[in-house]
Length: 129
Image (cartoon, rainbow, N blue to C red; front, top):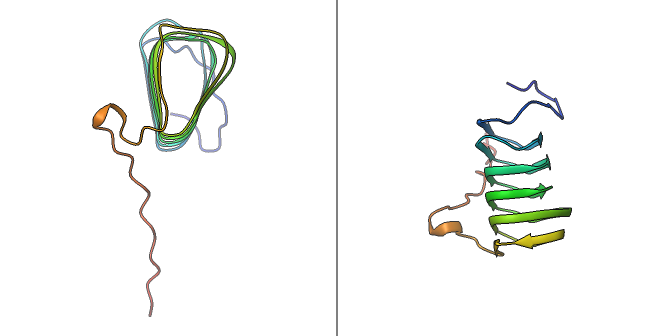
């Protein structure tokens, strides 16, 4: 379990599941099955493969292979390689890559895969006395 306020935690991501109410920022060296389910944004550094990312915010990626990425917000990457992936974004996808191969990119999808529904947070209504 990550400590409150901890910005970055480095650990091996072999056969790992991360579930977070907020944002996730982590480093991957590849290997093993990885799942990241985040209510907020996801920032993934390093080489990730065989990974599922579901994010209630934006996603920032490095090298990515054999992945499914579903984001409510935008998906961006630096000068990296993306191979054999399916990237679904509720907003835009901006991949500044060395190469995109065998990858499906879907932008502005409010209902990913036909069954994911993003809900807005409940608005707090002040009680009047």
